[in-house]
Length: 455
Image 1 (cartoon, rainbow, N blue to C red):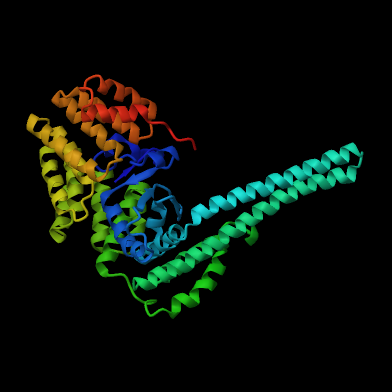
Image 2: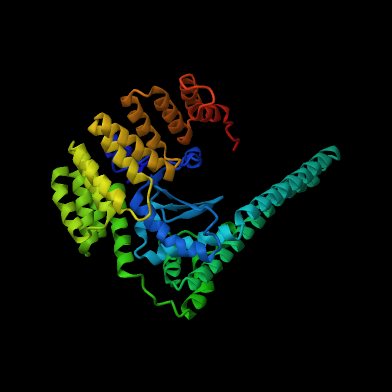
């Protein structure tokens, strides 16, 4: 698993095989610490698939992006759904996260963002008009030498802005309640329980109670947790699916995901706390990951091999095996493990072929380098915005002596990483080496001509 930028020591290059840099240029521009991990992404997409279908969004190109943040939160921006690792770690069952996804799908399907922009524009207009009226009253009061009129004008300006703000918050609370009801509908349509949603709201209510904070319900953008529970509990409990449990296989995958996040974000202590009273595969997985990351990588290898015997078709165990072998400087063996991971991967993640290519680069023979180019390109075809993949591709081309392709790949890496000026510099360098009109020349020209959108 790779965590970008602000993820404390996890950005260290020693984790390059396990972690990858954020792929979304939009996310980079927003300064979000993005997580890329084939296993977690596949699981979350499995959670989302039936919900998006029920919401009529299965063909809408919804991207789910993981954010390295400890808080329990999720949000949408355009066609992107962002989920914090904190939400994944704190959720004890798949159903809790599925409820979160259903809520966010309700926002997207309901077009809430577009309407929120309209409401923001209206609120801004109201605030401006109120401000102008207030300024006019102040000026009139000054001209008439009336202190009372001037004070009233100041109050009008302040009150108008506050009225606009409260109106906007009220609108947001309404949209949140609508998304909650839509989530119930999607869960019912897919034969799933809404109990996880209620568990999440009860968690929020407990946290609010423990904080001791006194919150004005009219000064927040979301309904109060107790109100959300009251509004949804009757609908949720009336469903014949309310007591339906997640499958044992899905729960195990969920626990293994939590183990991975705990190890990489909270260290050995975090993983130990999580599985203190729980054994099984997830605890073994946490132990293997912690040994690889914080102990002796060679000692982690037999632990992973024991897990592979239990789950021979799990591609992510082969991926971890490859990561360990890379760390102990056995790239040829690592390449074989990554090759198995790619072969076993049912969702055809772009991350695994890129890891395979990275191991082939470390092997370093001409044949291995050519294979590396092919594998990394395969990964980038599936995951076009993976900035790290282009850097490995540039390295492979550089070692093969193909400087034009190396500089173009470097330009692509900078481009998808949000460093547009550096991307243009390398694109111009690459273009000088390509024949005019060749595919590489044209792509370089596209990067050179790209205009950064204003926020």
